[in-house]
Length: 429
Ligand code: MEV
Image (cartoon, rainbow, N blue to C red; front, side):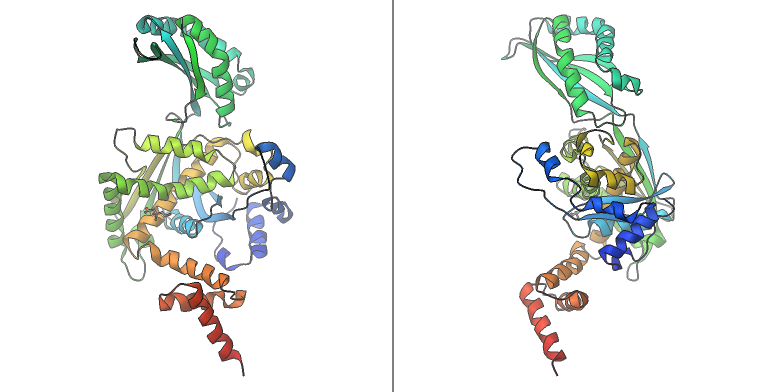
């Protein structure tokens, strides 16, 4: 990927844009046809139950991203206007200062085996501790293909959850930590837990309860940092140092108040989820893990924070991100596979880096908008265009009608129709 800077991409038609993006990504433009119904009806019917059709959402790329020194077009699928523009704008603000830098932790996912009706939980935990090397060896035998790829189970441990008496007697949970390599890991960790449960229950002298992964993948995190210099934060009306101070204050607001932190994190997840949906990831798993991570200290906290440094802002985001570039829906979804190609993603850590970078970018753009013009300003411009189209404005008049709506401060479909009528009357000789 030579450069993710594609100035004016938003002004092109979809067809022109495809040509431009294919050229930049070194992909044959005909391959982009995978984005139109990238999932066949048969494959869709085989994926879930009671299928009636396939649901469409817009697929876009965010531009201007440099992540770990390499440019990337970031694929995004989202129904909300402004998210792609916000990500691209924020990526432009930070690219001059090196873009985004990420640290991706090893892909460890934890499987849980619940053991119940134990008379002496201390003794059972000690026995499991003694047997941990054998249980780990058994777990590795049960995952030969993953071990051959350099991953596999890496640790077995046990913890007391409840002492008898109680509805379930003494309860212990066994954790099996698994290096999932480029897989998200749900299937392989669940299968492993199901197979390891009996041997573990035998050691503990217990009944077997649930056997399932935990979506709190707090070992499989991504940390993203970036620097936004004052001159990139400034605009014609607002000097950089003022924007910088306002964004830092917005970050502190989220750090002080969980009502605000949730909305702040929603802005982060706008970017993360859009990348996950575009690449057919289990975004519900990531969402569940991200919010549990945000609350890990006992208080719900922002996932991303911004601090003033000399002449700019430094942002830092950390969240668990269990993503995969093999297996799952990628088997059947051609559109999602193309999304990975467009982004130049060849392995799960790179996908985690791009999703994290998109999250931090969306957060920066949201805070900048909130701290300056207010969020409705940008939203209204896009909304006005959608309203103009819905009122029947032809393509060449959409921008004029949208400008007139925004100038009047009345962005309703009726107002758009009145403007269109006035334009038509003016053109009638
Ligand atoms: C809207 O989708 C996201 C924001 O509410 C995020 C935020 O408030 O930081 C703008």
